[in-house]
Image 1 (cartoon, rainbow, N blue to C red):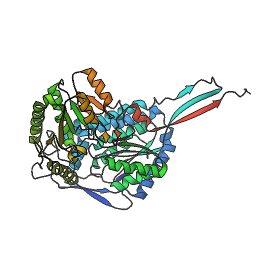
Image 2 (cartoon, rainbow, N blue to C red):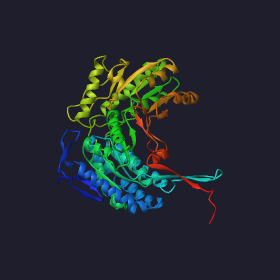
Image 3 (cartoon, rainbow, N blue to C red):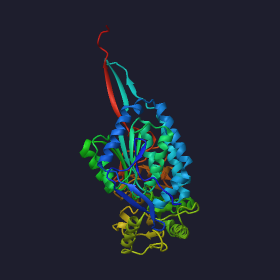
Image 4 (cartoon, rainbow, N blue to C red):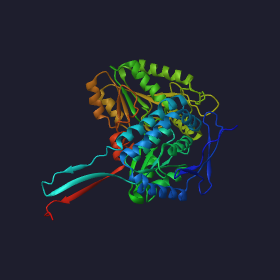
Length: 487
């Protein structure tokens, strides 16, 4: 019996067909076979209906909940994510090729952990008060915004259910979530957990569709906040739509061309693993991946050889079905992404040949050999632009100052890595790196307890931690005249 997948929109705690009847299809990147699922396209009428449901929930039952009451379904939802991690990971594997071992064992449990983290915040949203020494008693309140929306990328679909929805709910908002059209199935499975967890109708809704669906959310006059993760170019479009509509709040987590700096005094085996294996996780399709490796000149030949050897091992592990628990490296997400990555590789070859990789792996699916370019021209696209695939560029440096200059020579500033045994140097250099996130002696994976967001063209606003919660609140000042006589 053929497997069937939920493909409809999830509105007001029910699965419904899109009003237009339009659908789109998916292909499994492992072998390019069609996934037996016709996903519904949410258009203007569907989005308007979703917003009305979300407004009703915000003004109705959900809006009357205490923080402790909001936490109850959030915790149940987290448990359901954990319970169904394998099923969710399977759906991500057939949509965009993520290995089920990594997604089911790490990414999806992290999404559940984010829900638990923000459930803990739900009854701890404090205000402030100031004494009336000038005759006015002053109160500061932090209040929910109302209807919020999020547009997720395709590289870690379930993770962003946690990152975007959980803080919004903890703050008391309602939420409309649009998954990427490349990886929508896991979100629709998660939609089934909304009712089981006990959320009132309209609190969490899921829609699917292409970029036009996201544009309808970003431009809607009754949506108060949009959170977008994706490319810088698309992020700028989302920001303009938000600005031109109702000046809605906008959080943008965008692309990066992050640097990893390896100094001669680093723990070399750890640095090799972090900059090679850490970079290749999810086949390089991670926004915070350090795709520029900067190595101190005195250790460069041996270090580059060691990274090349790890890439060779990874190449031998590339090509297996991502649905198998033992698969380490999957394909890139689809033919479009494959073509994009290969076009970057060809541009790189115009300058020089890679020392390893540079070709399609096998003749089935969208696998790419892990690829390294050493010392490319700094004006080449392979060095300048985000590739979002298993392509690493390596350059050397002589001094700490030069390393900082090279690391900061980019329009992006999402993350960075430093590898050194000198803690003073690590603190000194991390302060000078123009990036929103810096990891020392390890690859960067955001902590749910600290803010994540970029500088420069890598976006604005923060996700995660207390700062991520504040993005879903608006601040109000209340001034009470205490000079009036009592009656």
